[in-house]
Structure formats: C-alpha cells, structure tokens
Image 1: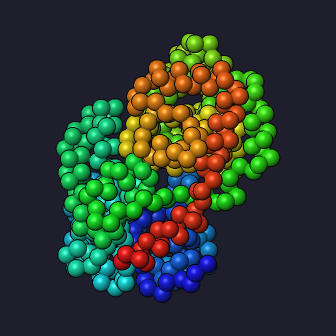
Image 2: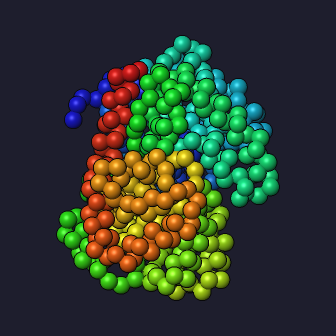
Image 3: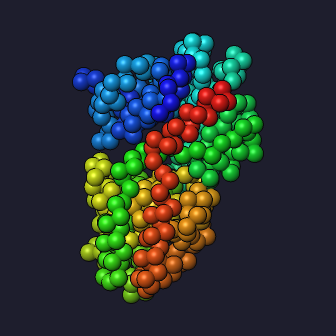
Length: 407
C-alpha cells in the first residue's frame, strides 16, 4: 500500500449522524467508508448532517470505524431537507462550510437534492472562493424524483413537480464547474459526463474480497440449479424507484404460466404493505416471503447466494449496489434495461435485461430460465465472473488516486 497523503481532505457524507445519550451513531457502510478513506489520507475533515434521537437499525457507534477515527475530524451540519428548515440555518451553515473549505488542502463533495443539500452549497462556495473541487454522485436524483412522482401522495407529487427541474439545473450547473466529476456506475456517468470537464466512472461499494462466493459453494449452487422451484430474490428498499409493484406483477405472471418458484424481497419501505396485499390477493403467500429489513450482513449474503435469479425492476437512472452484491454471489441479474446493469454484465453476460417497464417481457425471460436449467447454471458462472473485479479496497483506492491526480 502506498503512503498516506499528508494533505487534509474535506468531504461530506449525506447520511446522517444520530446523536444519542450513548454517543454518535453512523450507518454501517458509512463507517466502512470512513475507514477506507483514512487508509489513503492522514487527515480527514468530514461534514455530516446530525439528527437527535434513536438511530435506525443499520447504524452503529462511530467508534467502530477503529483507530483511524483519531485522524478524522467530524463537522456536524443541520439536518434540513425541508425548505423552511434549510432557509432558517442556511447563512450560519454556509459560513461554517466556507471556513472548512479555507482550512482544507483538497475538497470533494457529494450532491443529491435541493433544499438541505449541503454538498451542493459546498460546491458553490468552493467555486466562489476559487478552489477547485471534486464532485461525486451515485444517481440522477432529479430524474428519480420525476419518474417516481406519480406513485407518491399528492403533496409529494406537487413538490416533485415544483423541484425536479430546478434540481436538474443545479446538478448540471455544479458539475460543469467541477475540476473532477466522479460518477458511480454507468447510468450516472452517461447522464453527467457530457456536462463535466473531467468525468470519471467510479464505484462506491462496501464489498470485501471475502464476500465473494467461494468456488466450492458455487459448484454446489450450479448443481442445485438442476431441479426444484426457481429461487428468486431481491434485496433493497420497497419504494417506487425500485419497482416493487412491478416485481409482484412479474411473480403473478409466473404463477399464471405454471412456473414453480420461491421468492423473497429483503427490505422495508413504503410500498411493502401494498406488495404484501397483492401477493395475498394472488394466493401466493406460500411462495413469496417478505422478511422486512435485515441488518445481519451474513444473512443477506446467505440469501443472495441461495437465490438463483436476482429479479429487479428499477425505474430510475441510478447505480444500485445490490446488483453488484448479486453478481459476487453468482446470482444472475434479471431485470429492466439500464446503462449500469448493462455495463456490469458486459464482459461475461451474467444476466438478462428487458425494456424498462415491460413486465410481460421480464416474466417471459424469467420463465425461460426456469425451463432451461443448464443455461441457468452457465449464467451463474458468468455472473460470478462479472462480479469478480468488485471489492471496496480497490474502488476506494481508485477514487483516492483520482483526487490526488486532479485536485
């Protein structure tokens, strides 16, 4: 490993810190991210929004970052995603951000919103101060807001209609001024690269080398594909952008076509009650499982490895990490077409993609795999090979090298 860079890097994290009587709690993947950043920089300043109260299940004490936490300085920022909250604290927080930019040697910010997006404020202030900045994002937030508006309650639909165009303008405005653009996944990269002076395709994942399916387990998985109900899985939030209702519709069509299957959706979210109701209406309760949110990493990996198809219906231009987690588990990804998914399986073809929103085509493709078990086993091999390059150490090293080279 190369020596740590002695310059102080300033960046922001969009997930909140939770402040409790026991201390500060941070989402588990964000903790891993801080640990990995600290392997490459001797001094880090990290701006994070802070909330008071009990943390969600995936949060853990920030001390679990480990000894490198001593070299990380946390700058708390207000949690202010509502316009009224944002405007009340804007001037004070902007001044804090300007002071941190002035004290840092390199600056790079994550964006993804409108009101309350302190990363966007930081980009704007860095430009005003004449400081080159990097910018990072993992999805096209404005387009996601637009595409999912129709399925939201009326107040959220109204807010989406009022904000998605200003969000799109702000995203491109900040990206045009950036010295470096780091865009997670091909979907995001293809959208923003034309607006950026130096665009780079990167990945932001938290997968260890040890998380990849062992060769012996893959051999057992291939052998198990020969017979029995098709095992279908998904891991992620049950929300409009993930297409949970389409996912249910595909399963209903499989059942109508006489395809034997067992399926699970691992994750919580606003669409989960409706998904459960539709499965119950179809009489598929014995075939489909909704365990809800699971925080145990070992259980998630075990379920992904046991699945024979990772069925997804993503509707927005994002780069969902769950597809990579499926590939490292040798589980073929079968779902809606998109630049990110297409790029992931370009080398070995470890999946099948159909046009966005075409439930019938997705059900037909899944049924074909259920009827071709030799082809399914070969697809598992291809998926494992497509997942092989991905691990957290290599992707964070890549991003750190980009910052050193261009800022």
